[in-house]
Image (cartoon, rainbow, N blue to C red; front, top):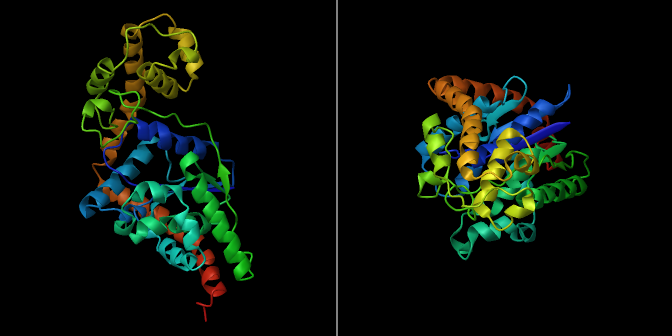
Length: 334
């Protein structure tokens, strides 16, 4: 079993990023059997599909690596690297551009959503990045790829590209990766608006808990988080029309690794005056050590770069045979 997954390096990481993606990676790594492999990469090449600040991208890549390590990704047990250090990703993506069809890419839902009405003004990279995503996983003959609902279509595209390439060139080169559906990641909403997703782009810093926030800041943000005047119900159904209450219960359940039903079993009949301090305690207990380790790691950014280079070296060794075979299949190896 070889699992491959990537995440774009973004700045100002928050609780939603941690619970929605990062913690899922850690759980996946910790569940691997002997002989299985996890490759986790920072998708800095994918970040180039939209306008970027070069200095911010470089800094965000190092900071994201620090967050992953601080959260529990072990560079000795998993292969951790940033995409740009392994040039085979770009090289295989170009080869696969000859196999992918424009019609396939035109049907990508995320392309339609991200380009909106300005398709003519969107970058070619934004249109073609699903082919780079395919190269990301096919390069390592990944057997499984963690996917959420918004990425299932892209994994199907990777399988279609692999199938067509194998068939067109009469080779049995690319493994068809399977979706890996783990425990559903919770959808974390804004602390100020239970109908909006927690986001770094929200102008209100009070809407989110940043992974860099101090303990006192976390406590105050949760104390002031929007809720309602009713007590907590006995069942999840009772939260259906209470988005802010549902969000706070969801956060508690995720941090405590419990079900929402279990949380309500403990707090049913209690108001938020009792619930919020308990939520703050578990948030501080979970996020405080991550913040402290991340801060310590970032005091030596060169050391983080060395970790990424070591991971890239291991990734390059795994990628080289596949890239050479793909080059040979299309006649680039003489």
